[in-house]
Image (tube, rainbow, N blue to C red; front, side, top):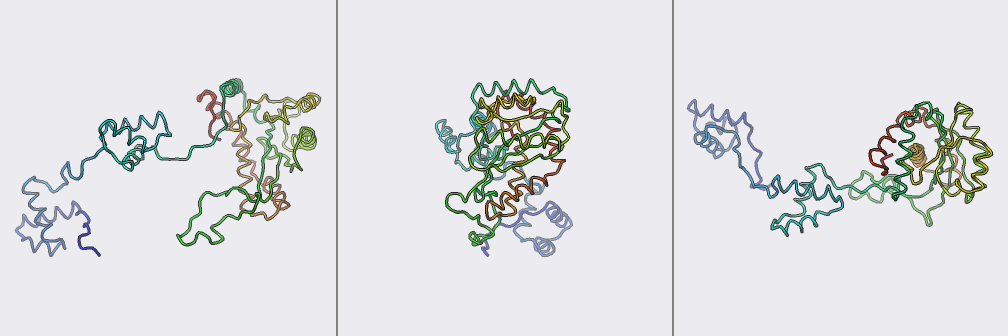
Length: 344
């Protein structure tokens, strides 16, 4: 071990004991032996007490900070205005002002201010008309009674991949265990296959789930609705007179023949703003479903479909109820952000 390694700072209690023994007449070597503290340290503590009348740490010790409070506020303002600004870019700006600071120091300053580097969240590309439609939807429905949302049948499609992207971003492993099977994610050429599913749910639980065979066209979509919507309405106990059908603006959903088919059904349809997955609470259930399936490691598409139906049926009613109970807060968040995408 390096003898020059810095010793741990003495506690206030030990320092006070050194002074007490010194005032009682004990010599430096005696104090050093009794408290197991180097003689030179004892001498420094006593000299400090004689000079300053205290053994506490004095202000101004250590290296002076390169970033003072004014400069810190300036750095925070830069990244608050443009979060994508890098520490190297900030360093260049400060050098132009005559201040030389390392990018590492800048990153530490930002971390101390609570501004940590994070990957930006992926959100739909919202144009001005999208934000306007989302804002109008939120304002129009924010004061709807809870009973209205409890009678909405939420629907959507999702794709489940057999060997898709890693469902976990990280594994906890030792340095030399990167290629142990438990620490890897299996991949195959061309993704290994996937399946599209249509599903629905309401406050009272999950409804039907159907695997889409082949590429879904508008006629196929109408067939799925015919087979699944009303059975789900009955299963979930929705009001036959006041239940509401929700769907997004996928081209299959808005096709002329689909719109005609829906008019013949005389269902009450929730007018939906485009580019708004964050307003559909079923997205939470899709995520829950995918994690449940991935934990079971399906090895083929047949197992993928089987696990999907089993796990969909296991989703607790409480989870569905909570999503709907908190739906109004989503609308409030959209209004507060003037139509921008929100966390879901």
